[in-house]
Amino acid sequence: MIGCMDVAPSTAPNDDPAGAASAERERILDRTAELALRIGVGLEADRRLLVRAPLEAAPLARRIVRAAYRTGAPYVHVAWSDERVARIRFLEAPEGSFEELPPLHAEAMETMAERGWAFVAIDASDPELLVDADPARVATARAAASRALAGYRRHVMANRAPWTIVAAPTPAWAGQVFPEAPAAEAVDRLWAAIATATRLDEEDPIAAWSTHLDALAVRTRYLNDRRYRALRFTGPGTDLTVGLADGHLWNGGAGRTPDGTSFVPNLPTEEVFTAPHRERTDGVVRASRPLYHGGRRIDRFELRFERGVCVSARAEVGQEVLDRLLDTDEGARRLGEVALVPVGGPIERSGTIFRNTLFDENAASHLAFGQAYRFCLDADGEDDAAVRARGANESLMHADFMIGHAAVDVDGVAESGDSEPLMREGRFVLS
Image (cartoon, rainbow, N blue to C red; front, side, top):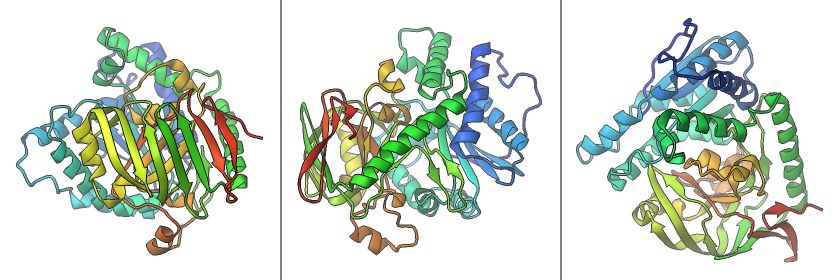
């Protein structure tokens, strides 16, 4: 649950009141703030900024606030959240109370998006915070939040406002990624892993990101030139054909707002992605990594699709959570995204399972249940019926799950029905 309050930039010499941050962590915090503003949202002097941050990420949030004001932002608003308060609600609140979301929060988010604010979200979540909470309560609350924030989501999913997500470790998260390490060491190791994943360990991270975004743009242009009708994924436990939406557009790396601001929604990002056709996915697929949804883990799961609908879903871990995810609404059983990620990238190469979709989805090619991105059809200005007629899916949710690895091949299927290699052993083979 996110509350809104103002925070003035800190004037203390050390933003970590416990004084526990190492010099290296201080450097990473500063670089993360710079990355979020320069690459993440492309902040300019006249743009206002909303920072959404959990309490445990306060040191990073304060650095972002300070850097934004020094860039010339006229106002920075911080919306704080507390996972432990959310957990208390799921465990203690009365039945029938999980449809509520404070209306002022949703209205403020939509108004800010309409007025062209930039949005930075800091992800510092505990992957298993809600492991003992009722999945029905969590699913109901998530659906209620999605409905309340539908107006805001329409703006950001149409690229009308610059937005980005960055991460900051917490002891709970770090302890699950590196369970064998003492608490302080685990946090430092997770900071180091995040720095590698986001290229902050490069001599010049901003230059490294510019080069990386150029490479993603090359792949995007190639795929848009090929105009495939479908993609076929084959590998152990997987033989899946994903039809693509009519007039689909591939995207990767940076997006662009109508006023020309370049922004990168996810830091890190290794993907190129587009919108599947909601009725044209058939076959079976096996997930290659765990999915963490609503604070619960779904692992070792297989799915079967017929005419775009997931008709069978079996998980060795988290079956109930998977079932509730798919029952969110009618669109939750259909695909809203297909993304290609080559093996050998910094996240996959690290061998780290982050237990966080922001990172794990960028280690492997993936699909997403639920809502499609309108900008993947260049559909801004079209009404919902026209977008739906082109095959874009609609849902209250969007949940990515990973399917790629070194044993998975991908073929592009042309309008003629002919196929050509697109990825072999997890790597692009672009002609």
